Image (cartoon, rainbow, N blue to C red):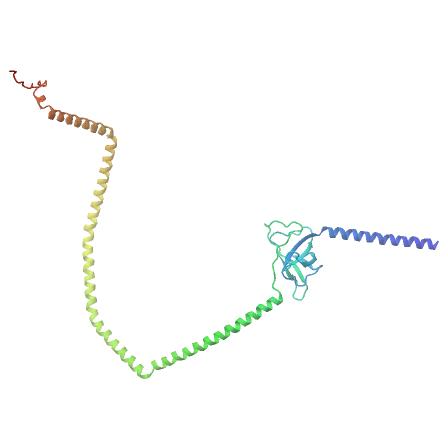
Length: 305
């Protein structure tokens, strides 16, 4: 009886283990099937391997599934990864090599991109942004140090030249400020004071004359201002009257334009008639005193013998 119970208990335990394994496998398969695959390419992978964490805007969304050289372009590394469904990867998202902290393992960091950009389809290539490796950074630091040393050496030479020029200028200043030059400058300033005093005594009357002339000119301009303004006002009134007269003439011509046209036509016809009469008088002057034209004179004929 006990053996039967043991067998039944063992069978129940085995069935429970099989059921648990089946549930775990099915749930794991479903979870794996829900991951969305993508790819990206980098020149420097920096220790990435399958299982490396993938971050989207700093949030863990997936894992790296494969890292290998690109079969088409061996100079870059192809990185396959999967992310959770619903992760809003878009055309402006950028994948790069990153890390959570200074001492942590590398991760694939993807930026959030732009909300206006189109969403990436599953299996699409995520645009990448290269990061500077430690070796490359070290090379740049060494190159910068070499350039700094050259700059310092050049600056030292320039400082030496500037120092020499400054010493030369100081020497010239010492020479210029010597006692002999000080006496010479004092004599020049004394002469300048004398010249200034002489000019002041001569400029005073000249300034008074200029002031008088300006005052006379102001008085003359003031005296002429009123007559000129009156003449300008009268000229303005004359121009206004002329403008009104021209306007009246234009109105008159516009109102009697047809009559003027008829009159000019009659004058033209009269002129034509006078021209015809003048031509007729020139050709037949007898028409002024006779009505009929006289008969033509016959040519006399000689008598026959």
